[in-house]
Length: 151
Image (cartoon, rainbow, N blue to C red; front, side, top):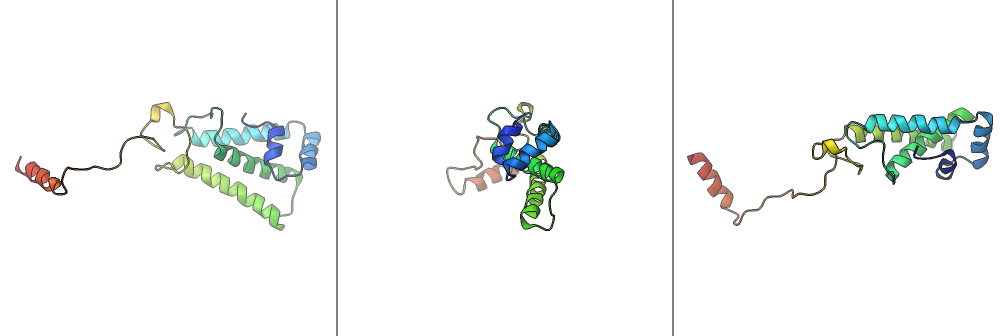
């Protein structure tokens, strides 16, 4: 598990008293939601990325996890959907899910996450290698093209 309920408390916008009330009201609730949301993230990303993520876990993954668990915690505690802060919490969770989906389906590698070892070079971001080609002369390509045509 990337975050324990104690570590999650420092990353969330939820007041500490509310976090404590959730754990007292239903022991293990936060731990189970963290494990569930972590599994959800890893399941989406497993096709392209090396999951479970080794320590140190990328900050973007921890951010997604925090946003999703914060929304779960507020759903459990209850909130006012008309309140501005509460709508921002829901929007952050929705954005996190969209970004996880985008990272899972991305061919360009929009997020810097560790690739699976068996997938090097086939997807996501792979370091190294040049992306350009240079000839000795700006006209050398025409010479090569002429040679190819004559063959």
